[in-house]
Image (cartoon, rainbow, N blue to C red; front, top):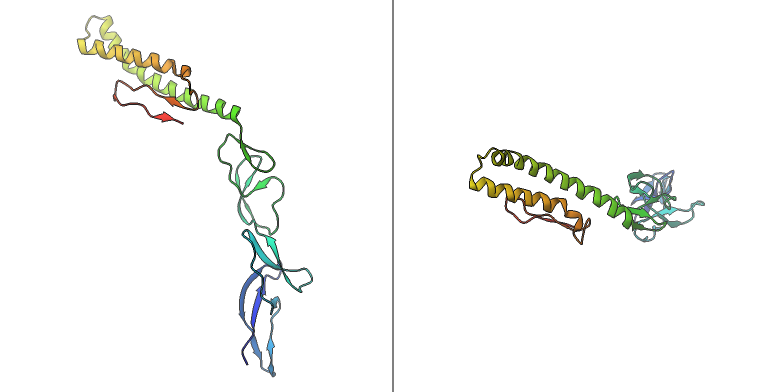
Length: 198
């Protein structure tokens, strides 16, 4: 006689765990031992993000949502670990927040365009100020040389280039794509075309 396949459920959650083979009954060769929380009926196939769970009356398997793992707080966007079976409570989502400029609409993350523009403006202006600082460091000794009448022709040309660069940086807000798409002016120091921020 072939041993029957049995299907094990978690003793607390009822979640399907694994299948196995029943042991023979040493007292009755026509009988098989079915341990607690094991069943002869196979669990059904379940959709994605679901598992099979034994029904409350222990008579059948039923699908239940399985959102365990990393989920995202819809108020902060921060990840959290979720450990329970069943649907997610309000305030949690399986979908990660795409950016700090997205807000939860109640069903999905939606881009907050005013917040994005404001945040990107702060980022771009901070980068602009960093570049202006470097440019001013380069201008100072060249300007000193000119003021003292000691500048070479090459230094005079370089001074003008750095001053032009500073003016271009100061006018970055006048670009049509500011602040979401900025074309940085090339620095006289590297002579390379600037990268685009998009």
